[in-house]
Length: 134
Image (tube, rainbow, N blue to C red; front, side, top):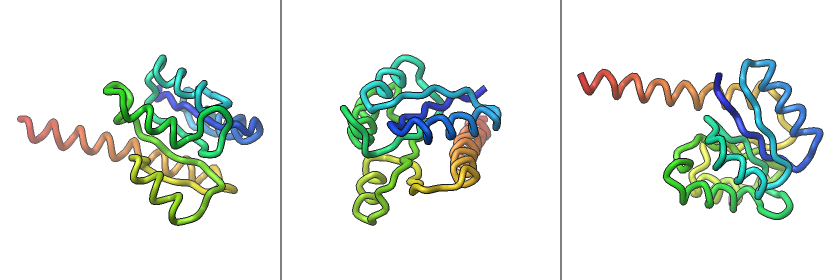
């Protein structure tokens, strides 16, 4: 079962995202701020992270930067979930290595589709790599 970490300070959004992902067959972990999320990520090494940007203690950009500095977490697929919809913000998040950027309010279907696409891309990469090594 794939493990997804949700880092979101809004408890309503965090719980709804977590529930939608559990109903779709994922194991979920949740954090209410960036610092807590970073600690959980380093402990469990999730398969994917969904992270808000504007949070107390440590924002989503700081979380992504910190994860990018660690060998064991730098390649974890990372989706920003945020109310910041400006192009400048999107470009900054993508420059940090985010795989997607979903703007609030959002439809759970869109988030699930983005997550599925990340996992399909990973599987495709490893399948191609395995074929090329033969």
